[in-house]
Each structure stands twice: as structure tokens, then as C-alpha cells.
Length: 364
Image 1 (cartoon, rainbow, N blue to C red):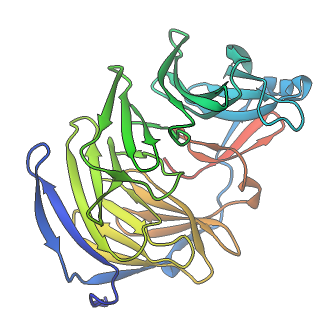
Image 2: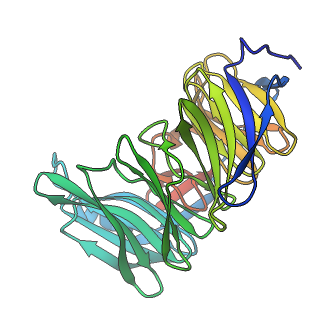
Image 3: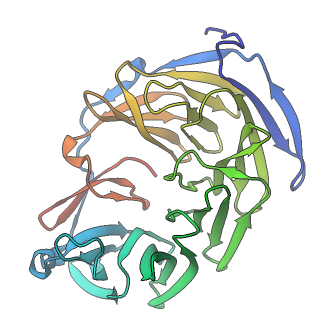
């Protein structure tokens, strides 16, 4: 274990423990020893094969109808979106959503008034998506809930493209969440699915690291950056209690991305050749993660058991950092790169082979 001096560490961490709702207490973690987690010691798993295959016999209609499979999600049944667009057109002219039950497809929803549909996901017997419609010289983003039991479509919120960036959805643990990105101001919204209630977080100014930041739900909580007087901190917001806990980082380097669960927080300073750090909350330990040269972080994700690094280099692979700090390196076929990606309970690299959806479970 090597102790790094203050001058060579870009980060000084402080833990703010919750003391009643809305009140915090500082515990400085200054001059900590920083351990090294060497990824070269990872256990290799070379035999990652497709671990589920879903047959959609009616997928043949894609060729017959001259449309394309644009989105899909599944729990007990498979749900998929067909997109109809003329060659070279900027937008689609029709969307259809189907439920596939053991090869029998049922049309659930069709629209020829929207021009784009994305962020398609499923949770607790509901489909969710964002649909786009044209209004004069701008777009309207509508967040849609479709109750599969009642076969009922509900609009949860609407935004103008003149006001906010595109909406990215995350569903999990009984909630749907998204950021309202107005540029200088970013708000967090989270929808309690069971009670049909939308809650807002506006205690502090949220800052995002990119336009693609999602309000990821892990352990019934969402973690995000806030910034006050030039000091960045990570807030962990418990969705059921609406209570928050802060992990504060003072740094003169850039946050490029991060993930968190109840056990640890991982962040990195740059996608290419950046520094990556792990803070073990329970054991109050800070580690720097050492990656092999020539390997860069494409994305990272977290669930209650581990942090998952999607690595890019001479050979693409998934690096799994478990809560006990053991590391597994998982290789998967390049055929999965650039294909559909499902953000449901089987979040995966997915490809379409004939009438089969084939995937490798990666996280969630």
C-alpha cells in the first residue's frame, strides 16, 4: 500500500453523515492512505456465451412491413417497438408497440403522429418511454407510462426541446427517474410507480458530467453530483425516505463519470488515461484502480453487488469489481458491439439473429 501525498492526489474526500432530514455533519477523511487495486490480477472468464435466447416468431413482419426493430424490453413477456420511416427521412412516420407471448404477437399501441420513440423500458407491469412530436419549429418530449394491466397510456410529463435536453429514463426498485436538463439548471424527478406520485429534488444545484448522464437507481437510491462554491460533492438520495447523505470530494481535476451503491462509490477523471478511484463506505477506505495501458473506460454501471466497467482496447471486455474487491474480467464476442442495449432487469448486449433476440447479461 502506497501513501500518496496531498500534492499527487487530486482528491480530498469528506463524508457528510445525515443527522435528521436535511441536516448534515462533517467527518473529514484527510491524508488517507490510498491502496492500489491492480486489474492485472483479475480472474479471466473466457467462456462468456449468450446466456438467454428469446424467440419472436412474428419478427418476420419487420421485413414484410419494411420497418425496423428500434427498441425492446422484457420481464415475463417480450415487448418490442417497430419503427416505420422512409429512406433518408429525418423522422419516422409511424411507431407500433407489440407484446409477444411465446411467439404470439399482440399490438398494444400505434401512433402516426409522433416522429421518434426511445428510452423504452419496463418495470412493475408498466412500459415507459419518451415520444417526440413536432410543434412548429421545435419538438415536444413526452414521458409515457403504459399500464399493461389496464392497457392504459398516461403522459407523466411534457417538455419543449427549446427548454430542456433530451430526456433519459431509468427504472428500478419501484421508481422511474430522469433529469430535467435546462443547461444552467438540472433538476431530478422521480416517479413512485405504486403510488403514482412524482417527487422533485431541488435542495441543491445538480451538475451533470455529460448530456448522457442518467439518474441511475441503485439500492432504492440515486447518487448525483452537486456543486457549491466550486466544491463538487456526491449526494446519495434515498427515494423511499427522501433523506440524503453526502460524500464530498475536493478536486482540481475533472469528474468524467461515476457510479455508486450502498457499499462503495467509484469515479474517474477522464475516459482516456484518467485516474479511477474507489471509496469503500463501510470500511472507510480509499483505493486507486490501476488499469492496463491502452485500455480505456467506455462506460461504467453499478448494482447492489458490483461495479461494472465496459472497457475498450485491443480487445473489448467487461471488468467486474465486486463489493469484496475481487475482480473478474469477462470477454464477449465483438458481434455484440454496437447492437441493441436493453435497460431492463436483463440489461445486456443484445443482437438479433433471425427471429431470436440473443443477449449476454452484463449488469443490473
